[in-house]
Length: 215
Image (cartoon, rainbow, N blue to C red; front, side, top):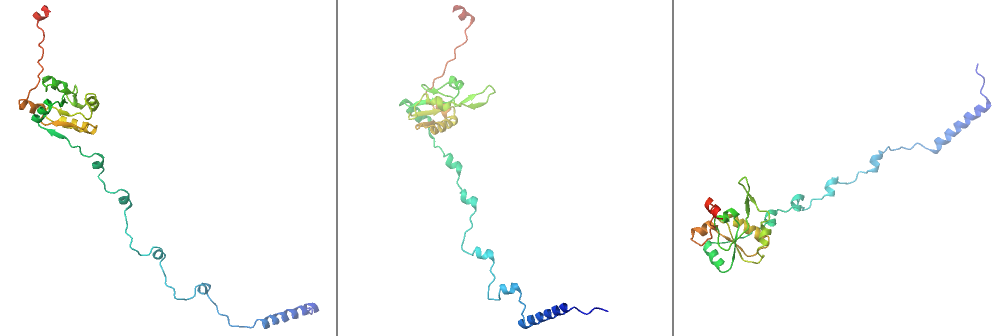
């Protein structure tokens, strides 16, 4: 048989019960509406959904430009860097008259060609050399050698065998600052064809035994 409750325990129970009663009286039961936190934070109002990218970049009249096209405009660099050089060409009749009037004649053929015949009073600076293999190589000191013979403002007739090499020589001389050079069209071949005077070197015959003994 269980012993009767102690007096102090009975008093404690009564005190707890009284406390519970007081809590119930101070907090009457009222209807509580459960609200979603997200719903409360974002009330239902008239808000139009806007795309962030659309808002950040509104549709305006913008022309798209290719960066490479803008940075490198279409320019013909070859034409700008190497403008065409205009060479003045005269016929052999005009060249002969101008030489008689004191204009200098520059022959750009090889020494071997000059030895076979040349125009009287001409000076020789080869534009090409003939290699032992029979090929032609450009004279790397051509402009320098011409500059040692003529001034840049001097009037010069430039000729070769047919007029091709002399035209190239005129281009180089004009680019180097020579202002008054003229190409002789047709060259030495045309000079001969028109019956103009030339100087032909007469080869010295090899000595015979009799002439060698006489010497």
